[in-house]
Image 1 (cartoon, rainbow, N blue to C red):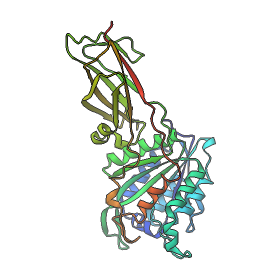
Image 2: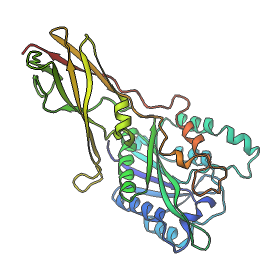
Image 3: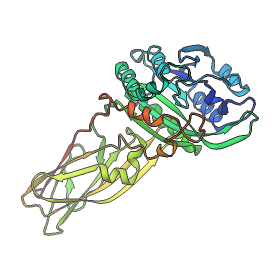
Image 4: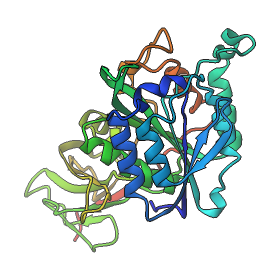
Length: 368
């Protein structure tokens, strides 16, 4: 993971966003968006306001955006044109120059005034898949909640969803996934994050102190001296780095279901204790560290040596934390996101998926 050379923010200002932008009234949206933009102000950045038709419009400085956001200058009557917004964004930034795009939107696709709007809705998932697939970019959707105000400035709900859609190279997207998610989590307003198109590479891992064997050196995953006469069980302490992946993998249910291990030559192997060490802020910076500490218990080894094969299946398609915000019957529902389920399907259609992690191997020997 690494920061990009430049951040390009794209802010939607359609009518359904008005409750976040009410003039001279505080909302969680204003607080969190400003905190994120100001935190990364040392990185080169620009802010673009998206037009009513979804095309890119005026560019704002950081302070100008803050003033207009706070004073209600972005209150609008337009509808949300998600496909048009994405097309405009894809043509407006360049990953080869180290740029990353962050769309801030409530993601409520409602093709009002378009020809055959009902037909467009049925094609929405396919359109999203086509745009992202042709753009050849990696994406992450982060959900957040905010207070939402009516025209008089009265709070309707304190859990109205909106989103940060991060688009770019996976190492830059992952950097912002962790940073933005941390700020939202610390403020109690993170829903979840979900991503597609990632090539995570190899799993990063180390070993702790084993039992009834020892690691031959500090580099290779080779353990020797397993003595069944002392104890039938040999325990390998495996430490797996999780910060590269979406946050759901650090949930105990997802991790234990996704962790796969087997013996290649007939030994028994089972998962022992699993602990998690998670720090979202390291050295006062938004650097996430997440580690699963796993005890692998090996027993009944029929030969002098065996090999364990293990890997991690990531919860790519799990949307359980987004589910409370799905199922909106109208774009006017401020507690849910109209058409969210169609968008989530779209980012995983057409082969735009994360690459499967490759298996790893551990050698265990009775010999010293």
